[in-house]
Image 1: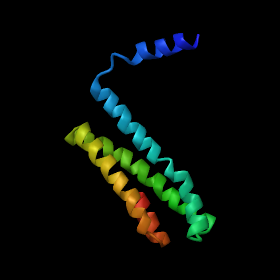
Image 2: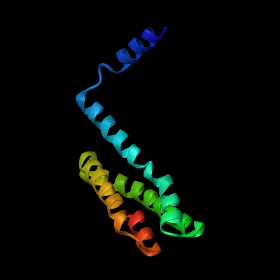
Image 3: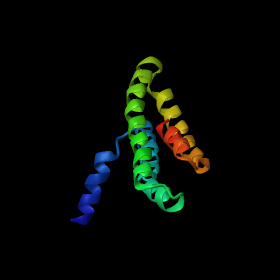
Image 4: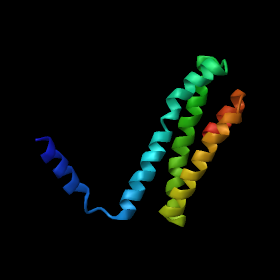
Length: 115
C-alpha cells in the first residue's frame, strides 16, 4: 500500500519541467521565510519590550504592505513580465527581512515591515 502510494506520487510529478521544479523550490524557500512573521510578535514583545498593541500595529503594517504589494506586483507583472517581478520581489523581500535586525523603534519596524 505504501509503495503504491509512493509510485503514484512519482508518476504524478515526474513529467514536470525543470522550470516548474525551480519555481516550486523558490516558493518553498519563500514560504519558509514567511514563518518568521508569527515569531516576530514574540521577539517584539519579549526581546524589545514592545506592548501587545505595538506588536499588533507592526503586524498590521505587514498586512497592509502585503495587500499593497500584491496589487503592485500584479501591475508590475503586466508591465515588465512575471520573471523580473518575481526575482526582485523575492530578493528585496529577503533583504528587507535582513534589514529588520537593525530596527529598534516602533516607527522603524512599521516602515520596514510595510515595505
